[in-house]
Every structure is written in C-alpha cells, then in structure tokens.
Amino acid sequence: MSEATLPASATLAAPAAVQRSRRATVALHTLRIALGLFFAIASASPKLTAHVSATEPFDKIGFGDWFMYAIGGLELAGGIALLIPVLSGVASLAFVGLMVGAFSFSLAFLGGEFWYTPLILIVPLLLIARAQRDQTVRLLKAVQRRV
Image (cartoon, rainbow, N blue to C red; front, side, top):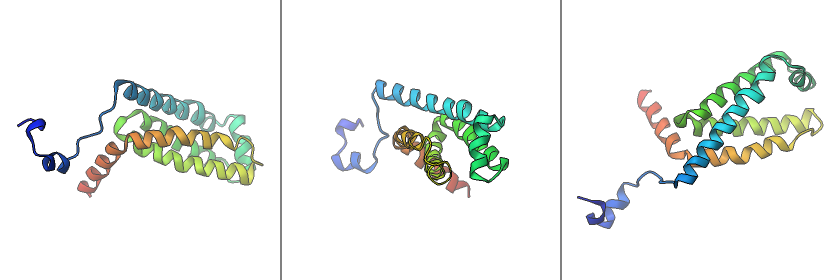
C-alpha cells in the first residue's frame, strides 16, 4: 500500500527521516569536512607536536603539557569523528562543550585574547548537531541496546 492511500493517522505514527535538498546535503557534508579537517589538522597538530604557538597559551593556563596534549588528542579524535556521518552529531556536541571551555579559559587565563574564535565555531557546530540529530538518536539507541 502506498503512502498516498494510507490513512492520515498511519503516516503520523511513524515519522520518516528528514529529507534534505541536494544543496542542503552538500552544504552539510562540506561543513562537516571543513570543520573536521580544521580540528584534526590546523588545531590539533600544533598541540600534539608542541609547537610554540600552542605551548605559550597552555603555559599561561598553568596545567602543563599534559593538558595541551589531551586537548590536541580530543580535537584530533573529534575532527575524525566529524568526518564519519553517524558520529558527526555527537562529535559536534562534544566540540560545543570544548569551545565553551576554550572561551572560558580565554577570558580567565589569556586576557580575552581571541575570545571570539570559540563562539564563532559554536554556530556551525550547532548546525551540524541539529542536522544530524536523527543519526545521534539512532546511535544512542544502538549503544543502549548493547549495554
């Protein structure tokens, strides 16, 4: 029986996945790839290689090199996860939390230098999280079934 011949109550009972236009799908993939590569390469690599541009701010924070390497590792893992569609929603939500922390540390320890960068990155990350919310729900249900 086609959807056109089903009663209205039957179509409301099982909502279909969100259908995006081709442009929206391409834009979402492009945004995920751009942010994934940014976090994995441009942001994580200076921290993981202890480049002076990364060590100076972390020295000001006072947590030592372990914190810089931990943040670099999180950025690398999250950047890779943004490239995987089923993980991109969860990764973007995790990055929102990381960006809130980066904003807070920037104000508290770095004198507000580049405070706006994490806030700018939060916007596209929230767009990805919203667009991938159905994937995130499916992933959480699959994890709950295995527990």
